[in-house]
Amino acid sequence: MKNILVIGATGQIGSDLVPELRKKYGNNNVVAMAHKSQPSEELMKGPIEFADANDKEALLRIVKGYSIDTIYHLASILSAKGEQNPELAWHVNIGTLKNVLDVARDLKLERIFWPSSIAAFGPTTPRDKTPQRTILEPGTMYGVTKVTGELLCNYYFKKWNVDVRSVRYPGLISYKAPPGGGTTDYAVAIFHEALKNKRYECYLREDSVLPMMYMPDAIRGTLQLMEADPSKITVRTSYNLAGISFSPKELANEIKKHIPEFTCTYKPDFRQAIADSWPKSIDDSQARKDWGWKHEYDLAKMTKDMLEKLKERI
Ligand code: SER
Image (tube, rainbow, N blue to C red; front, side):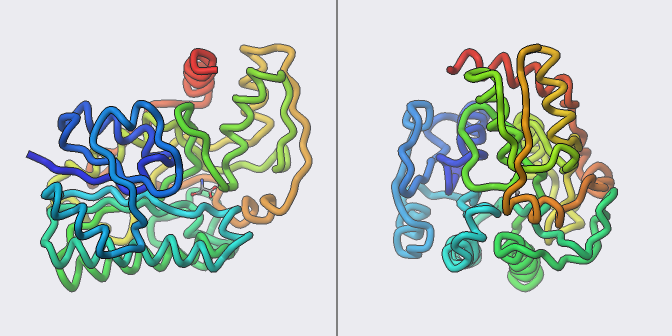
């Protein structure tokens, strides 16, 4: 029987992951941990705790109290917000990860998941079909915390055998929770605006191609990685993971097939420089080989599903 803690449960990934884990492992076996954000009604249907993951005592109390054996540590400040407050990004992204890894080591927890990102790459990284092992010189504090975190995970595995697993998520697109403070957020905001106002002003250039993924693929991949036999895991920093690569213009054109009146204009801001430093496409052959990763949603399938699901919600 698994006892799971999801830290950062109210965020973009947590909002989809918690219900999925509860379906799979039982409602009472998945504890959602939130900090400042108001949880959705859906999250409140199971056990929930409010704490700051930088508070090690609080974390220990929760982990011991629920006999937690598995942690999904998702709390993080994203790339754009991190550039506005690099100090906070370091404090939240690295301070909390160190706490989680220490608790996992000291209490001999079974398994940890921590997300890295395409933001671990930077302007000196090859941008097409970015390889698993390549140059990691990110230009954002968010990216710096992702590279640091990857190395920390690898270190805790090598030195103390902490079974921590990670993927470098592309930009994630979902309808349950809005993303907050990322560079790839336009690919979510555009759907909300298309449905509500039939127009959107994008803060990236129309030709800015970035790697993206629909949330159901991301959740499925995450669970697949976490269920894989330890002998299959050959990467202990973080696995490259690819879904679909597209530009804002390509996405806008796909939305137009469903909402013909939709118009998109482009007014790049500071996030353009961040996007320009990230890959266009990702080589995820290692994840495919090691634990059978395969994405399901292409641009057309994702757009259709996203519009349908979001329409029901708003
Ligand atoms: N979606 C994230 C961001 O834009 C990347 O991991 O910051």
